[in-house]
Length: 233
Image (tube, rainbow, N blue to C red; front, side, top):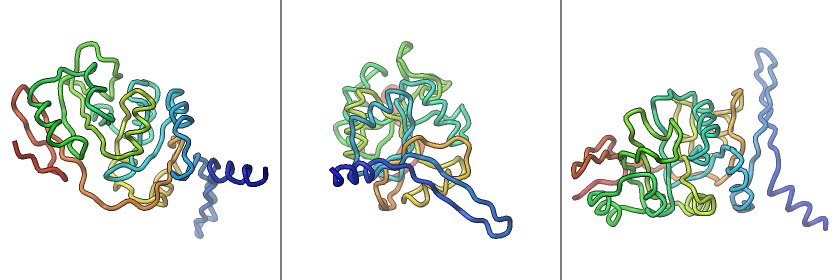
């Protein structure tokens, strides 16, 4: 019984981060739910997400900040956490191409890219359907959205069990560097009024290039950001 209680405590605990600023004697506390990845209960994370929670989680690049991409209130909170301009829409990830079909107009160019580069670090910007189920902030003002098929097993499992695309923007405040370790994540948000609800501690992540971003209009492919994937069409 004691062992089970200890494991429960180990899996779910609230981390109180205390920092002392020597000049003024300031004490600040960080209250965010921290969960070790090895102790993660995916079903509970999905329940949190369905109820509008925001999470920090490891991805194939850096730590990502995410929520259910169809939840307007959660998407708005992501913008508040990042202090991001509302006209800069958020990237979403899906576990397989079939999940994105209801939201966009699939075309032969996407089919070619999907077979060659997904799952992987290629993000595409495409036009969404007029009725698509995404809130503003996921859909840009010009009627486009950015998505990729993730290759990270955790993001894949969460999105699949959620049965919804998952927001996957870097877990940093706008203009600050993307975090690759849990200490950087905690320091990023410790003094902020709006914080992520849950942080999944996946340890130190390898420093990899960001995803390549391309925009697709018909058969034309425009590289908006050169990242890890080099297109060969």
